[in-house]
Amino acid sequence: MQLFRTVTDDTLRETVQHGRPDFPFAYYEDDIWKYDYHYIDWHWHYEIEIVTASSGTVICLIGSEKVLVQPGSAVLINSGVVHRFETEDGAVMPNIVFYPSLLAPENSLIYEKQIRPFLQSDINYLTLSPDIGWQNEILQVLSSVFQVQKQPAPSELKTLRLLLQLWEILIENTELHSNLPMDRKRGVQQNKLRIMIQFIHDHFRETLTLSDIAGAASVSKSGALQIFKNGIRLSPVEYLIQYRLTQAALKLRTTEESVAVIAQECGFSDSSYFCRKFKEFFHMRPKEYRGYQKEH
Image (cartoon, rainbow, N blue to C red; front, top):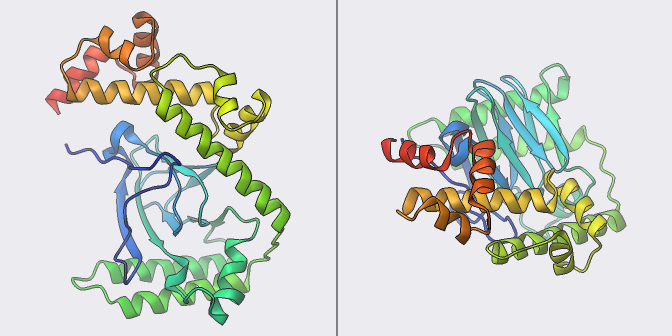
């Protein structure tokens, strides 16, 4: 079975292009268990994303919060918000992503009055429930968007018309509180998080401490802990260990190096400790993982 990966840069920004440059919109039906490690890892993008579930339950982690998306409901994730998708029951996740400027050109009257305020609001995400009238309207429009994408030749014009209809319902029923000082503070914290994550990616093979990671972004150890907790629900050291483990898993799949050598190359000085953490994370020992990957 082919496994998919979430490809990001060192700031966790997703690097894949969604749609075409002249029509930045894309529709997906993601089977989360078909992704590497059975989750869609932490990432962010400039596009708006709306996620549903056609089967199972999608566990959407947004910063320090957890949102459960089940069939009939949805979650809208604002531009630039770091998030991750998991499942415990093999959820399939129909979703759309689109650049806000698809709805109206940047700096146009509609963009400035109806789109930018939402992007700059304190809303990281919105849950959409069929039990609330206006949210159910959005869900019905979203269903129509999906149906258009399933046609042999999806109509860009119909897609755009439906997205504008969806956005109109959203804006008419959402209170937007734009707190620019808070928005700037959130932006600063996001930037520091990305700096520390990039530092981990660059130096994960070395011996790293919490002080080293915090120092990369010129914050205190307690500040680094809070920034990571608010951003990706992990401590800096937990993220470091998980990143080392995923890099080790990649080497197990793509090289014939011994487990001891891989452990050393990925920053683990004790191979027994590495094997124990690997089993905790992947639910199988490194050699079992290598054999499983070769069979599949």
